[in-house]
Length: 614
Image (cartoon, rainbow, N blue to C red; front, top):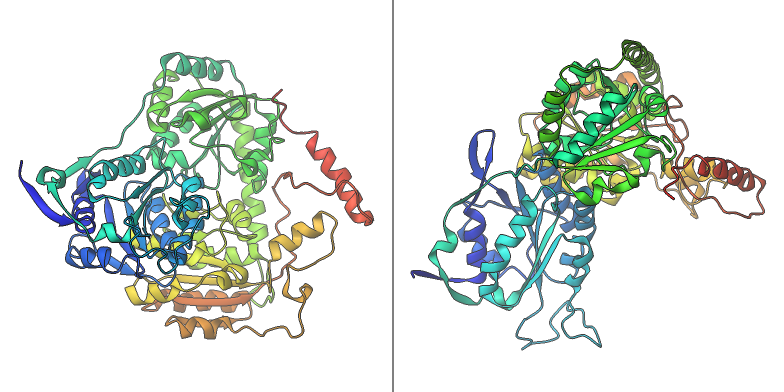
């Protein structure tokens, strides 16, 4: 058997470079590149190997480990999980900085390969710089924090372990059901150790997407339930996108008349102009979708885990017959649903074949069509505003942005009040035009995520909408976007604090406290110049006062040659009243405040609407 003598780090880079996938009829490397912030735990081993392999596996430098991992995750999400990236760090804080991002990828079922440096396997120089020592367990390192937020975890303590571990990690990343972050904690001395690897280990390999057909009995039950229903409703989740099932779902809905509502991850699987598209559902849902859910006699979730925002904390359709189509059995059985375990596109195509002679009653189709017309009118009203208006609502800012950018632009957001408003109001015409991280709702994802989206689709306009709170949490990858020539348009809505949580706080009976800057303990309120800060990172920027000025600035941003930040002050209290639904946020049972006691009574009324799974 012929062998190659390589260090473990060199072997890892060579193997990663040899892994290919099928995308759009062609074969491309699965790993688009490596994000690296070097330190003493990875600069000598991984750094040397990445430099040697930089032509096949490009390496990018970021400014924050969490931010670079967000960019990698956003890339994979925008690529519909067909390709992924690698992130490598030093040990200690460099590694633990990625744990939030690992949790985000885990919750959202998104692939990323994390390779944090680790302590010396030999323990010769223990304790090394940044080493976390457990007084009772010598095998523990800081990287054990990755275990609960990784789908696959291994610690590489010998060079030959890569022969077994690397294929398992990649199989996890490519598994439609088990997809999520894989972590290979790479001991820093092992990275530099040599081993005689079998040459065939580095042979070019093409991995193909697995499509699981549904069990015949489960599919029969779903078909029978649809045929006996009068008012079915499909709820489309991110699994529809990852299965590349958008066209199949559009055809099924058109042919059968079944209406489709969308989760945050599923928004955009149908064009907002599709005649069966009811829009968003749940807590941040459209009036059309939520009305259909209340009236439905059958709910069919496809590629969604039906989290609390989607179901209105199990109060939106508490006693409806429920089927869950999902490639992951863990999700398909949630909410006591009848499960159909299988690939979304495969199941949708099977349904289309089996339902050729069936359609929703015409009166229901007409009612849904009228509801869509009414909701679209509400969207227009909510997003309208005078050009001279100052301190607009988030909805009015969204409307101005939507009208100013390209029809195929990708909007990126993650946390605060904006995701709810975007879910209701943003009109997505083209696949992939809506990129929201709302499984983990991670503040700070927005700009780094926008960078990952731009790397996935460099020819599309990428518009990041972010609040001042998220911007302050993480903005450093704005500089990376300039450095890499990946232009972003960033619209920063400054409501001077955490406006979304301030509204929630007051809705639960408490006074404004510790959310808006003015309501927080302070001696002097900082006059933060976000436009100047963005310029200091190399971006172009300006501050505007009115909606008309915002529209004009967006025109300049679109014409600019690099990332451009537009800042506008917004109203922290105003939100879209149309649509929406109850959300289970527990209110104290006892309080000295009458407002809290009143909110508790309203909360208990909401709890009584919840789905009974007993």
